[in-house]
Image (cartoon, rainbow, N blue to C red; front, side):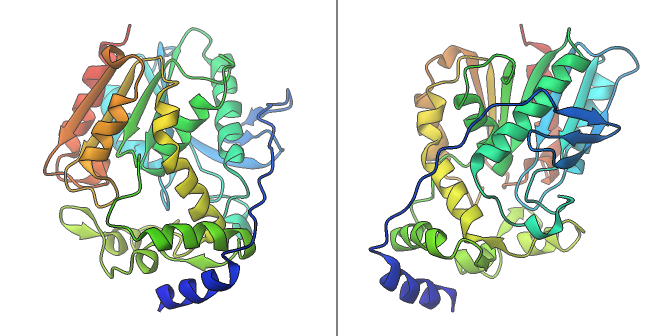
Length: 319
């Protein structure tokens, strides 16, 4: 069983020091678009999908998908916005280390969170050049919400940042029912076995994880060609660190913020989201919408139409 493996390895590794490396967040001038591909800060190529209005957009939503997700996850939102909010474009780039990453050996792995941030900064800078009169909104879903939240907090360069922020199903703290020893074990083991891979189900030791009302994580994932069965301990430890720093990151948000979460989200306790909201320096700029009967994948759950309509209403009110 995975827990026995982790316990035995952790016992041997608990005294090893963790090494923290500094990473630059600079974006070189060489970043560019080529057709529907981002040539990012390090020259790596990441495909993106775009949904464009007939006229030059006044508003651009940049979507960042969740773990084992893809840019196509933003199609329901994009289709709705094209019909109900004219002048809005939606772009979504494939996330480094996920199932549509062209570098196949990197799928399920990330070296450092700064790579996610710099990809987003690179993409945002190019979008601003392409649509210089448009406001830019970052929309992150699940893991994507961690990326957009902390990418915003990690820089004060306005060229890198967005004008407004949407967090869908943000994971702002590790649930209290997740064993403390396991959190620490994953963190320590990631330093000595960064490429060791585990599934989310085995880590939680649950055979079924409900992410929508009528389906489990496995059922949803089996439909997707881009699904990743196992992620590295480095990636999972990185996400754990980012989750723990969510409340700190919240203190830097000074722009309009919308966050949406479900009462039956297996990954996020509603009380933790409320605590996150209390850290915001400008609560008057924040809108929290709670769906008591919804699960984790709000864009695909039984109340998805309502969720997407609520996002549209909020976007219409942006100053």
